[in-house]
Image 1 (cartoon, rainbow, N blue to C red):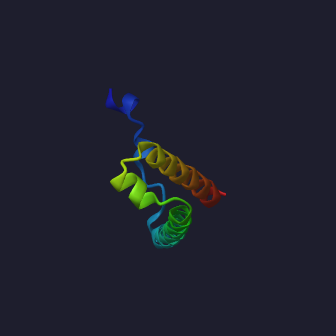
Image 2: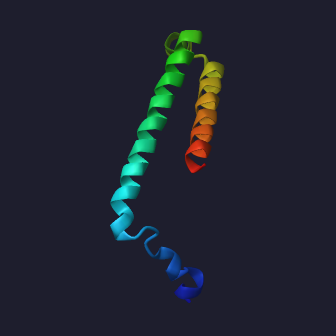
Image 3: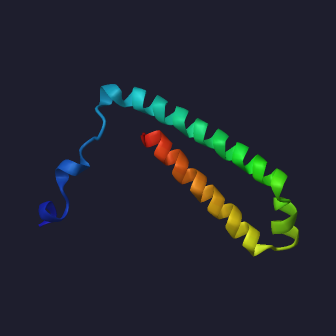
Length: 84
């Protein structure tokens, strides 16, 4: 019953153990590059909009939604660039 629900072959390791270090290093490199892009994007957006004042003091929900949408869009672009 459980074998038909869960494919036990799918639970096997995706990466062989001898290649695991290479995959981890590559992943950490792409994570750091993605974080740098997020910091740069946030810095540019904070120069264009007074984000901190508008969201924290003025409770501007619309700007929070716009900034969140922009960050999600950047995340999708970065993910597509990483996958190739």
